[in-house]
Length: 77
Image 1 (cartoon, rainbow, N blue to C red):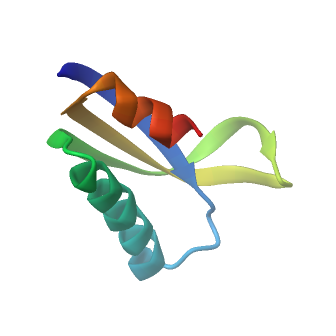
Image 2 (image 1 turned 180 degrees about the vertical axis):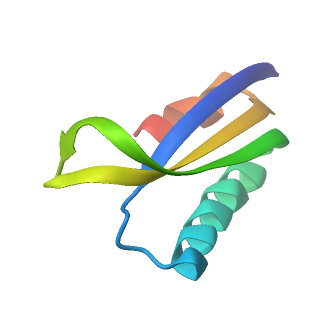
């Protein structure tokens, strides 16, 4: 198993409950694939370096996990 870090950005129009639900779905997906979550950090609402879909801010979440390389391939697909 390799150690991986990922940061993902969620749209700022989500409520807190919706944001937490989306993060949990992502974590559940990792766990289903046999990954072990090492660290999770909620970086909150931040300004993005450039506009994506006409939005200038997003909810940032950082995850560190151990997984086989095949898990990362599935996430990128």
